[in-house]
Image 1 (cartoon, rainbow, N blue to C red):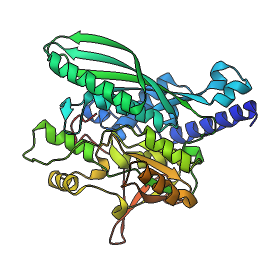
Image 2: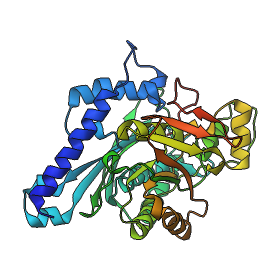
Image 3: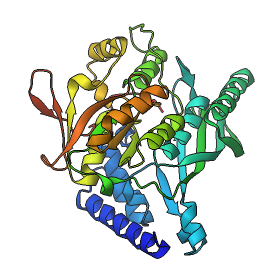
Amino acid sequence: MDPKNRLNDDEDRVNANIGRVRARRHRLRDDHVTLAHGAGGKASAALVENVFWEIFGGDVLPDGGDSAVLPLAGLLGETGAAAAAGSLAMSTDSYVVNPIEFPGGDIGELAVNGTVNDLAVAGAVPKAITAAFVLEEGLSIDVLRRIVESMARAAREAGVAIVAGDTKVVPRGACDQMYITTAGVGVVPADRRTGYGEIREGDRVIVSGPIADHGMAVMMARGDLAIDAPIQSDTRAVNGLVEALFDAVPDVRFLRDATRGGLATVMNELARGSGKGIALDDESIAVRDMTRAACDMLGIDPLYVANEGTFTAVVPDASAETAVAALQAAGAPEARVIGRVVAEPAASVVLVTGFGGTRMVDMLVGDPLPRIC
């Protein structure tokens, strides 16, 4: 493709996404920041759309993803070599999980995996990350060493380098043991095009594994609940799975990791961004028995619980079986098709129950869960 045509096409797609998101902007009704603004649901969306997007502006932010994708042809000049090189993906995130160590992982592993995953679901091959630490006075050096070793191990397993960092120490009580902020960069191959504008009616929705394990593992680890359940976080780097998916199905339409706000929030963002409906099959969505039991006891819908090693993908209908088989072979044995893109109800998500009925799946309202990422 001619580089100039590619740039014009990319600009048209970005402008279309901006128009769709602005048309469906959530209304910000609050005068002060609340915990609900960090829960990943409607309040979070309203804050981001009406403060950050409105003030920062730009052509990339309104796409709604966790990584910015910047064509190298635009950064390096409109040359054939730059266009052939693809795009640069950049991501940043902060981790404030409590407790900082939990079954199946810790804040350090979470920070590395979360950054790698944000890049991977943008279609990028992650290359390097940075890490900044805010440490509370009195934090055990042994605990800090354990967390840093965990980060190093996670980076090696994901195939990325930790290339820069920063450390600050604050007085006792000014933070909760440790906060970590990361940034990451990766390269998106020139032949990969994902996003809301690529989605078509009839496409299939895939999830890479069971949902809700991470959020429930952290809740159990806090010790505030009279429940003892051996639930482990699903935190893992998914870049290997994403590469296996692209190798099998080059025309993947859309990818997103289901973190804050869970699967329900990702599906609503997908519906709003594409303007199409999403019909989910309740019986196809995997939830481990122990995780479901804990959710039931607490009155929490697992669709809204965070995941840290599970992602969703939209692929053409004809490629769905190939996509699932590729993910299963690459280390996600419980990957499965969970739904379909439909025309109606537009910009909405419905769940088809095992009894043949349907219910609307809206975005999370309020803040029903503790800090989990």
